[in-house]
Length: 591
Image 1 (cartoon, rainbow, N blue to C red):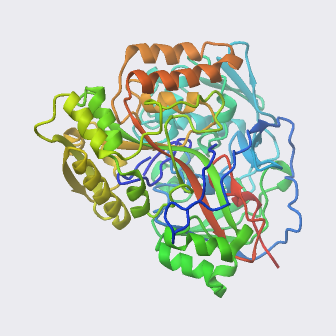
Image 2 (cartoon, one colour; image 1 turned 180 degrees about the horizontal axis):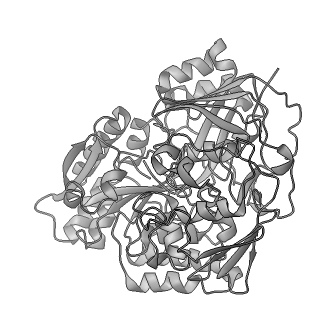
């Protein structure tokens, strides 16, 4: 599964889908809909600290040694460990926090806010006057796991590799590098071009320790994109052959890969060549991290809530809805509620479902709460109703509702809209796919089918046995060609409308699974990036409202929050606001 992590992918609703929210009231599992006193607050706005230096600030009381076990219920884990291709909302933050460094990075601030600080660059980069060129000075004390220095040339090579969208079809280059970097239209990448050192692309150049990237259009958010691990180094030669590197990348962070069993387990151990003085954001407290993917939620809940030895130095990235109330009482502050910037959506095919009233009917026929519960989510806690595309807390967001109030499940309203559109006599046919190998997704899909059919639609479900993004993003896929309803969950790579609206809604964008294509909206997006930087947030918020009010091309279904359960021997239990994941960089085992 893919997404934006950069825009990352996560499991969502019935359609397994692609990734600073405020939260509403919590929800007690034994009394659905009953609010408790514990609520999500507004995620503090992020900031930047270009002068941050290594070593990272010590965590109070932290001790070294021990193994941290991380259970990831329902998450299959990475498809690849190659930074140019990795694009998962659950596994990218693991690798970025612990294994693979980039030009810049996010750290957790004193109030829990994400702070952008340097990483392999000595600061946050220097743009020219119109943001069409960025220069990053690479530090000279970072090393690979074999002790060899990380060079500016290797950083430039890593960035160049992201342009090879034939080899790395679902990586961040597909959305960002090819859209912003100069000359990307005329260069297919080092492997497709048989250019093993990227000597034929002049969009990046190296002078001394400086790496300069040229842009085709103004890009004031490059310092944020620089925090994606794809904007980091890759060694030349056979070591980084895509087939090999996908399984065992060279580490330059505090941990290296000891073993990876896809969909099962990832084991990281100390990288003895990592110099904490070179890194302003990471720690190396634990000896090992063991990540266990595709875990059964009920079993993990029992491990963490029963007080068993297996749960003491462990954490879970989710809590089952049926154990949420118990987790609150048993875990206290070790149950961490973390806002994220992710949005889940349904995407009616704009080419085929051309009447906005039908698209709105889908919104009213979608059984939000029943679908969330079937998917193991906690309504009001891990899923908040969404009326906008931009999440609460994002700069420039407007607080509006397309129909004046929050759209909720209302099959009567759905049928009325269909009747207005001329579909009163026979149900409107919807064709959608679902992954029948995913038990939870199948259960949620069944709820969606029931809701849509009650709302006046006839649903044709196509079972498949693969993650849905491999279908949705392939225009030649036979199943995809039959669909008129898909989905996308997007986690913007940085907290701006520029990382959210164009990937989802610009004509021809790879993750525009609605195939929305309106020249006036494309032109507006192009105009916003030419505005003074201080005027851009408000312009993105205005465009968000305009798109949904005038076209309603996609259906925002939820803003995403997370629940993490920490064992009693995990020190500094906390979340990472930049990725909506546990704060892996700062965890330790209490000794």
